[in-house]
Length: 114
Image (cartoon, rainbow, N blue to C red):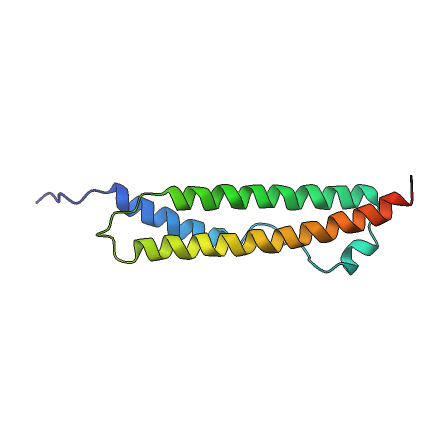
């Protein structure tokens, strides 16, 4: 007997679960300012670029999850989406803090060379 249950919402929820699990797997960036003390200007530029890339990727993921239309009949669907968005927002805030530290270290280290 064929089921009339649509399959698309299941894949939407499965995608959200995957995004929730994979969102924290991408490169971790140290927030410790002492980690930047031994870096030269090129390394600091690379660190800032890597952090900026991570911020952009995380923001895109957060936007995709926030825009996902989850049917009301899916149990806990909106709760999962909200939790993923909140996790991504917290990650963006941590990355922005790391970026501020790297930019400050770069400004100090590279200003000496001018």
